[in-house]
Length: 357
Ligand code: NAD
Ligand code: DAU
Image (cartoon, rainbow, N blue to C red; front, side, top):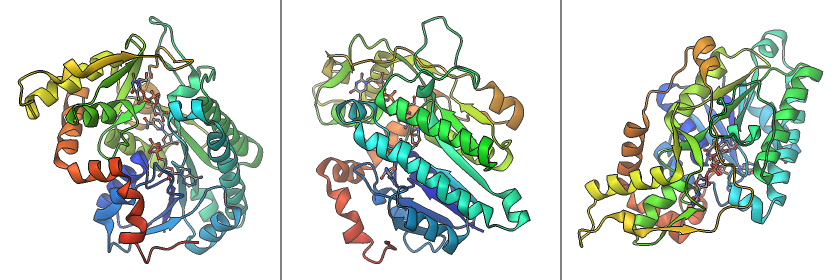
């Protein structure tokens, strides 16, 4: 038995792989293209662990994906692989269409072919879990109820439109071909190994480097925040107990405006790593031009996954953000490698014998 994880060198995928192998002996085949967001340094603690098989490759590569399925015979596929950054999707949507839509389509087709050839028992037990986002639902007005699984899809950015398209493909492959799929739609994650292009890690590393902390527009956009380990536990729960064909919203019951997030980061850094001149990190905050088409508010109603599968987040924002900042302070080499670009040399330096197509 094994599982195939795609995008397992990214932020959430690597947390998922680390947590999985900390709790289970079931091998993980980790297929990741290693774009700028893929970092094998996240998985360095798995060196020498024969339960982790890393393969550098593209979910859009049909012959590679088909070969991996036949070779490793996974009982489940977890699709984390995606282009994930909204700002990048605004500057260059092409890769988002390619990986998030075309790549998911390819993964579905390869999976369908593989699944059809399984014996009845294996066919019945097989699952494809597609990891998606709350951004597919679009934006909420201040008093609107949080997104339920029934909320209409109204994506507003090239990123969220590409994720919405992938969700629709996954749904259609279930309804038309019977492929046993599960979909999760999660809110904003934060935690260890988060690439510092996203709000929380960017604020931590910029603050420590004495750089400006750029807040888009008025900073009053609202997101729901979930500690990444809680997202990983929700995915494990959906994989083991979710009902085939269903979607599950995953969230932290923790809506906060961006400016409050940034000020919280500054306050914790003031305590843990006070500046030599005694000033607060919040003096580095600066308001910059807003993101085009910026969604004003997301909020997740996570009652279905709690009611049906008994999942709840363990961390509050207070405990999760403290752990996260502590992790960045305790891992300056990881931060430095990411900032210098050295993490991209990791494959050659550290994984000379890695399995490649
Ligand atoms: P990330 O950008 O940190 O990681 C993405 C990973 O996918 C990288 O390792 C990258 O190399 C890999 N990848 C990209 N294109 C690929 C391809 N064509 N083939 C194989 N691998 C490829 O993203 P993340 O934040 O870890 O997000 C993971 C998933 O979770 C995404 O599908 C994202 O849409 C979803 N999601 C993210 C969040 C969040 O807050 N970060 C919230 C909800 C859902
Ligand atoms: O909601 C889930 C989504 O959360 C995921 O699907 C995406 O993959 C993930 O990137 C994230 O999208 P956001 O756009 O919400 O995340 P980001 O960290 O880029 O921005 C969070 C908020 O902070 C958003 O309102 C924009 C704002 N922001 C962001 C950056 C990078 C700033 O004000 N300044 C910044 O420098």
